[in-house]
Length: 281
Image (tube, rainbow, N blue to C red; front, top):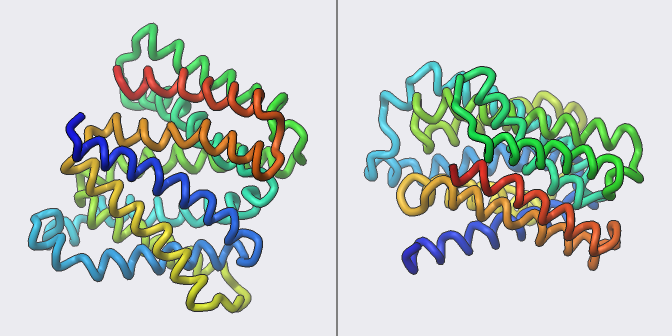
């Protein structure tokens, strides 16, 4: 990687790690539906603010804006994102580890879906990686920090995995149809509308809290999407996200007293053993 690519890679790792920790803090004082509403409104607002620049850079145009497939996929992903955020914010205060471990297990499930539904070829190395991720996910539910948690929390963990798989399905339709920028805008809109419907009772959220929620979600999403479209290979972008898993597992152990450090690190390393072969085929 070049110096620029290395800098972007590290920036993605830092952004997604810090964002997860901030959302854990937000969960203490802010209702999950209100958090989802802040994420949706923030994404829409940030995308609209930068829309003229995106237009000028040819990553957004009228055709992308009017593409029905892109609109539909973005709105569906936004609704799924609302559901995921509500489950995440209910879970993250009790287990940062479980929230973090959703991503690698979901990546294995997405790989299986690619083979079954889209006819993607799979190598022996790919089958090994999927097996590792499946077994590590089952192991985490039984022997990891999630094992000591309630059945309701296990259901939230499983639902979040299903939602991330749904994201991947939407991405396969939405990004080619509308481009990453307009697709992100419609995802934010779907997130905002579904969260507004879900949030039946008014919950006051201060301006400063809303800003933290909105910017801590929207800016990393915008940066990540732009980086993968112009600077960094997709596999390296997702590797940066994957590296946050062992890092957050250790933070969860040492700072939030979740599980034993050795066990947390072992599950974190297993997630990388399963993830890397899928990213670098």
